Every structure is written in structure tokens, then in C-alpha cells.
Image (cartoon, rainbow over all chains, first blue to last red; front, top):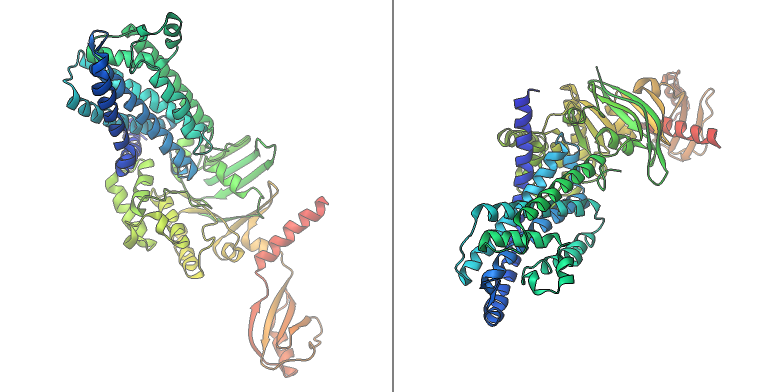
Length: 261
Length: 308
């Protein structure tokens, strides 16, 4: 097979997986897209309007404006993760992952297809939440490039994490443990609602071990031009994690962990 | 060229259960091949290894000259698999299952639609193409899995008990279609518990037991091993005692049913003549047992006896 034909074939395989993934979350949009939009709207109303007006400003900006980037990113993280973990685990559970495993689809395309689906759901919800935020405040972007880059990179990173979770999961409980007991606490403690400068010195240091803090702050920089952490550190950390998780996911697929006997 | 060459394949599961103990198997291109064995013999493990669903512990697998370890994509591109258990998304319509599968093999959506129509019509599923797969009966689900396995036009089709739980009418139509495919050049490997199915469809056969191939030959050579055959005769008038005919073993299973064990080297004309002389009228006749079933049981039992 010529190189051109091989890449055309890869393109079709990727396109098939991606379309299947997008159709899946669009078909059940009430379960996949709507909840995050409603929850975040409530955050805007309660924390932004009712409580936020009493708080006043944080890091030199209105409290509502301060929490918008974190809430948008929280939706991106939750949805990109949830999409891949649920979809890949379901395909394992119902065994239709075998349709892909018996096909000539290379592992990296299988991974790219599922991650692509997760990223698109994360971005769809992220954009929807941003639109809702615009109802409550006048959003201006300090840096389009930084915002877009963090938006996409964070979605990729958490889609990869969702994929690894799905590979190891043996039950539906296993796919909800990580989001409930690890992801949500890390997100809440990742500076979505506060600046780490408000914390005592010790807890500020502890917070630096939370990777979500870097993403939220870099994203906030993209919106407001303020951040608790240097931007380069955030990009390096996110980029490094993406490389590591991609390599690990491909290793799991090659070994057939959780998929083959 | 051989369609499939399996050499010294071992499979040791993490539980330390050794499912395959050095399996050697060759299937010629264009063959209709039966792989038989009792439950737990290693059939599905072997098929799993060939189709990349199970990792082998050691040994080599070559499909149409492509080595599974070195060219896994090329191997998988030649294979179509109909597994034992349903493994499609139950919430997708039939047509999407087929089109997605074609896409996984790199077939464009336009071509996939044409092929989906062709195979779904062939397997009488076209009128239900928009039905969610979970709403299909067992027989229709089996047909869907065959259509899905064919959409990329595989050179080697592997069917792991494709007619399990399917009614006789659908089973016959599936047999007919499989024969048609084989005549068009598709190599077929079939595992089945219906030994009559294997006997009527397949030209070559391998019997696997406890992770080892205990016999591989042509179907004819295997069936020729049977020295005797038992026929069941339905009589017009009941008898009190089985007649005594020299050279034949006869017994009554009930007053109107006579069982006759005949040496396969001997013709049965004499039997009817002898019965007619005794005023016994035969209304109908059938084989008591499927011949392959008898051989299969002989081979497996012989092996078990040897081990004890």
C-alpha cells in the first residue's frame, strides 16, 4: 500500500471514531452537555452575584470576573474526562471495543479518536459555559492565544486521564471514583474560587503540587492577565503531562491491558 | 499460499491455566475448515489469538503470508470475525454498526453505504436497517454480525459458533450463504457445536482438545475411519423380537423401530432383501447418529482414556 493510501486510510479510521464519539454525546446531550451548563450557571448566580458582590475584588478584579476562567476550565476538565472514561469503558463493558481491536486501526489512531471526542465535548461545554458567563459579566480576553492553548491542552490532558481510567476500570463504580474523589477536590482546591495568596504559606506550598492550579491560573491569565504562577511553568507542566500520559496510554493499548487476555 | 499457519502456539493465562499447548495448524487458501473441540478445549483462545483479541504466550501466527507479530495491521486487514457472543453497540442502528466497522477498516463512507446495503439485503436485514440492534432477535443479531464481518470483504472469515441459538430455517439460509462466499474464494474457518453443520459444510477439519490439536485431516478421511454405521428403520408392523440375520447386529428399540449396525464396507441391499424375506416392511430409514459426532466422541474419549 502506498504511503498516500495508508494515510488516507488512517484519516478515514480517525474520522469514523471521532464521528462516532461526537454523535454519542450529541445524541444524549441532556446527560452530557446540559448538566455542566446548569451547574455553572448556578455558580455564577450564587458565588458571582449573591456572594461575590459582598467579596468585592480579588487580585484586582471583580470576584465574578475572577471565577469565570476557573469555572469554564472546570467544565472543560470534567467533560473531557467524563466523555472518554464513559465511552471507552462502555465499549469495553459491552465488548464492542473488539470491533476496533480486530480492525487494522493502529493504536495511536484509536487513542486519537477517543481523545478527539473528549476534547470536542470539553470544548463544546466550555464554549457554552463561556456564553452563559457573558450573560452575567462583560468578558474581555487578555490573550486569545493563551486562552485557546490552555483550553485545548487541558481538554487533551484530561481526556487522556479519562482514557487511562477507563482502561483500568472493571466496573462502573471504577469510572466514578476518580472524578468524585480526586478530580473534583483537586479542581475546587485548584484556585477556581480563590487566589492561593489568600492561603497561609504552608498551604500555598501544598497547592503547588496540584496540577489543576497551574491550568486554572494560566487560563485566568488568558482572560484577565493575572496569575498566581508563571505562565511558562504552566505550559511546561501541561505539555509534559500530555507527553507522559500519551506514552502511557499507547503502552497500555500495545500491551492490551484491560482489553486483551 | 496458506491462509493461516499457526506454529507452536502456547497460551498461559495469568491464572496459570495453560489453554494452548503448542498448537500447529495450517488452513489452505479457499478452504472451508472446521475447528472442533469440546467446551474449554482452546478453540476460542486460538481464534482470539489469530484475531488479536488474545495475546499469545509464544509461537507464531501467519495469515496470508503476514506475520502477526511483525505486521499486525496487515493480518487484521485480511480477517473478518464473527464471534461467539454479541459484541456490538446495542444502542446503534444496524446501518451505523456496519458503516462504522467499514470505517475502522479504512473504507470511505460512500463505499461503506453501498456495501452495507449489499450485505444487509443479502442477509435480509435491509428493511430493519434503522432499528437499534438491541431490538433484534438472536437470529437477526447473528446475521448482523456476519454482515459486519463481511463489509470489508475479508480474505479469511472466522466464524465462532455463528449459528448458536439460531432456528433451523435461518441456519440453513446462513449455510447456503456461507457456501456461496466460500465458492467466491473466501477462506472460512468455522467452529460449531452442530457437527452436522461441520460435516455438510467443511472440507477439512481439526479437532482440538485440552489445548492440543489431536487430529487434522480432510473431512472425508476422518469419516472413512468409521467402520460401522447404525441405521434406524421404522417398520410398518410391530415386531415382538428382533430378527436374526447372519452378519448383522439388529435390535428393537421399540416394537416398530429396528436398529441395524452395518459394516461400512458392506452394501445394505442384502439387509432389505433379508428383511423382505421375513415379511418385514420398512417404511423409512435414517442414520442413528451424526457420523462426525460419533468420531468426535471416539477421539475425545480415546484421549481421555489414554490419560487415565
